Image (cartoon, rainbow, N blue to C red):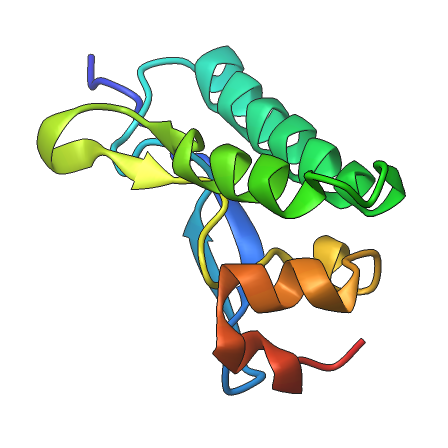
Length: 113
């Protein structure tokens, strides 16, 4: 009996506009499908919270966004990954405010919307 391995991945845009699959959370396999699904749901929830910052009061929202980017590290040691990285998922690009996109990476300006 073999051990099943599941990966939590999400379709992302690179800064050059190409699409690729990136890890949704930890950069490792998960033992169960439910654990991989949970990692994908956590990824989606974190991105949605980041998108919702566009509606936050102007005063202090840049700092809130930076804090969320810093706090989006998941996992530990060699498998650690950052949910809010320079390559947003495909579903996020259309919803992401330009100022939030610039906080992720200045190279994200050229992403199609």
